[in-house]
Amino acid sequence: MTSPDTQQALIDRLVADATPVRRLWPPAARLALWAALLAAMLIAIAVAAGWPFGAASRAPSLPWELVCAVAAALLWAALALRDAVPGRATPRGARLAVALLALAPLAFWLGDPSTQGELTLHAFIERGLPCTRLTIGLALLPCLTLLWAVHRGAPLSPRRAAAWSGGAGFLSGYLLTRIFCPMTDPAHLLIWHVLPVVGGIVVCTGLGSWWLARWRRRRPQLG
Amino acid sequence: MRAAQAGDQAMYRELLLDLGPLLGRFLRRWTNEPQDLDDLTQDTLIAMHRARHTFDPSRPLEPWLFAIARHVAADHLRRRAARLAHELPVERLPDVAAPDQDGSAMRGLEDALARLPPNQREAFELLKLEGLSVEAGALRAGTTTGALKVRAHRAYRALKAMLRG
Image (cartoon, rainbow over all chains, first blue to last red; front, side):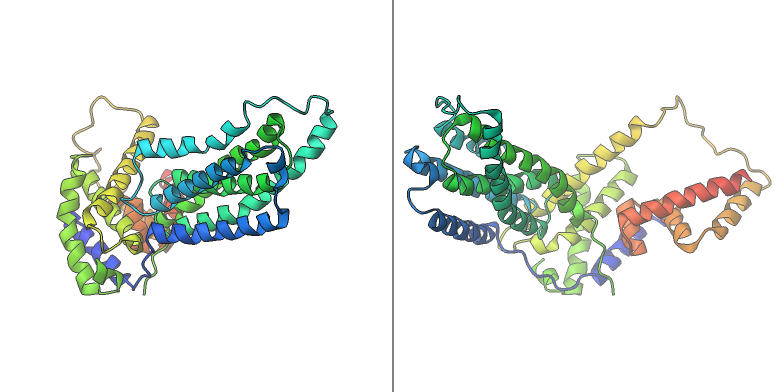
């Protein structure tokens, strides 16, 4: 079969498969929906925690830390949703800036002196594990909804889109947990709050990239 | 494209026919080999078809289309580089095929092909005789790329066993 014949046969096949499709909403509209979900979770947790939130009484900068985390989560989500549409991926410089923004919440406590010197290892773990569980638990809904939203599109770089989705989801988990957690110690925050976020992003990138690449392998709906 | 998204098959055909040469010119940046160029054009059309719901009619078509084409080309080159890494280069390819004066080898291959299960034979014919890419072959066979690769692999194994006697 010659090349034009092959191409013609392919076009016939594609045309036969051209059923009406539901157009994807623009990334901004989909981001607004995801932001509404995050806001609902944030309000529910804030109401449950009551003011002053856990660490807010001891760390006056907590509201600013939360604002930074919200901004980072929203921007990571925006990049994930843009990556789901061919031709809408964000330029490399902007991606790098947004990626670094995720480190901003750390600036509010990383340099603080440790207040847990007297804690035994057992007590350190006992206080930390609930925070990790909460971070992961609260990250699941925003992370999975975002992955699902990206999966509805056609991400040309599934690994990158999965990393952005995981990052947005786990940053949400981080900020929601920070509302509850009364600890201000940098070692506690680094190990029990930040490490789960990093681990979550790695796991989400690994599993999500496989799932998000499926749009290239979708079986045509013929007939 | 808006009409294509709504399921207008005539407009979609027209669009695909128009896009073929445009894609060919764009993809020439990545390869000049006619076979590769055909594969890339077809793979891009398939990817475009699968992603057609993501196109926003209020925006120009080219950035959307060329982003897909660029991705398909990069993917293709990456796979080719990986394949070449596992192949041994030869100094000079023979100009002609090995002699099969009495036609027995060809008859043996035809017999072996006839004995293959139909789906394996189809996979072999699409990929090796018609020279389609895995994606285009899968679309023709109405199956997934993974399933087509498995069928082709089983066909190679069965043919090898049959031809060795």
